[in-house]
Image 1 (cartoon, rainbow, N blue to C red):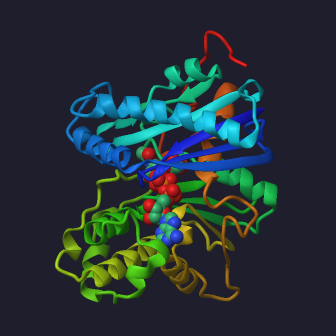
Image 2 (cartoon, helix red, strand yellow; image 1 turned 180 degrees about the horizontal axis):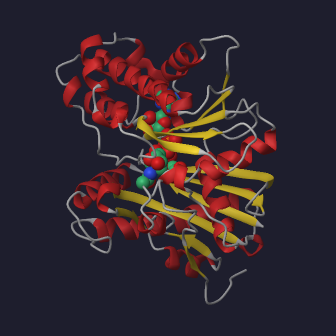
Length: 376
Ligand SMILES: Nc1ncnc2c1ncn2[C@@H]1O[C@H](COP(=O)(O)OP(=O)(O)OP(=O)(O)O)[C@@H](O)[C@H]1O
Ligand SMILES: CC(=O)N[C@H]1[C@@H]2OC[C@@H](O2)[C@@H](O)[C@@H]1O[C@H](C)C(=O)O
C-alpha cells in the first residue's frame, strides 16, 4: 500500500510528511518526505495550547485556546498534504491511507490521559483519502503508556537493512525515545522515553536569543558544562524509573539551570540530553552492536560528539550512525512510522506491545476515518 505519514512532534517546529510503500510488516519502498514549518503565530498558538491543556482531566476537553489550535492543526495538515502532493507530483487518489498523529498537547500516562489535537475525520473528508488517527488512546486503555509507538517500525527498518543486532534506535525530538531491537529481530523490543531531547535546549535558546533552537549547537559550544547543575538534573527520579515509561513535553523544567549564562546553560542542557541517552543503557538487556540516531537532535554536533564519546567506548566498539548514514531518514523516520502504523491498523496488526508501552498485551491502535467520497 502507498501510505502517507504526518507527524507534528513535541518540538512544535512543524509538520513532517512522508510517503512509504508497505504491507504493514515489511517496507517495500521509501518515498519522499517534506517538512512544513509552523510560522511564529502558529508556533505560539501551539505553546498556548500546551498551557491550556495542563489542567484538563478529560480528553474531550477543549478549554482555553485548544479549539482554535485544533482547527489550525487540522487545516495546516490538510494544506501540508496538498503541498506535498503538488511538490512531488502525486495524485492523492494513488494514496491508500494517511496516518495522522496530531499534536500532543498533554500526555499523563499515570492518569491514563493522552490528547492529540486535530480532526482526523475532517482531514479524510477534505482530502478524500482514508485517515487513521488517535493512535495512542487504545494502548492507554490497556494499561500502556501510550508511547512510544515508532519501535515496531524501527524493527522493520533494522530487519530490512540487516543491521547488526542488537540495535538501538534513538529518536531525539523534543523528547528522546529509545527502541532496542534484540538479536534475532523478534518482537521482544524494549522501548521507552529516555528524557528530554531538544525541548529544554529549545526553550533556553528561545528565552536567551529569541531563536527557536540552538542551530549547530553554536551557543552550547561556546559555553562550559556546569558539573554541579548537571548532577542535579541527573537526580530526576524519571531517570531511574523502571521501563516502559513516557514523558510529557512539560515534564522537565529549566529550574536547575536558572542563573547560568546563556552559553553555559545551553552546554549543560545539551550534556544532560546526552547523559539521559547514555543512562538509558541500564535498561537494555544486552550491549548494542548498532546505534541509529534520528530526529532533529542528530543534526546537533554537540549531541552527536557526546554520543560518539559515551556510547562508542568498549571493544568491539558499536557502530554509531545517523539514520541518514544508515540509509534511513533522519528527518522523516517518525512520519514514516505513522504511515506504517496506519497500514498496520487497516490490517488489524498491533502497534504497541507489553515491552514497548507496558500494555497488557499487543494493542491495535488508531481510529479509521473513511471519506464519504473519494476525490481524484
Ligand atoms: N542544525 C541543528 N542544530 C541543532 N539542533 C537542531 C538542528 N536541526 C534540528 N535541530 C533540533 O531538532 C528539533 C526538531 O526535531 P524533530 O523535528 O525531530 O522534533 P519533533 O518531531 O517535533 O519531536 P518528537 O520526536 O519529540 O515528536 C529542533 O527543535 C532543534 O532543537
Ligand atoms: C505522547 C507523545 O506524543 N509522545 C511522543 C514524544 O515525542 C518523542 C517521544 O515523546 C515519543 O514517546 C513520542 O513520539 C514518537 C514518535 C513515538 O511515539 O514513537
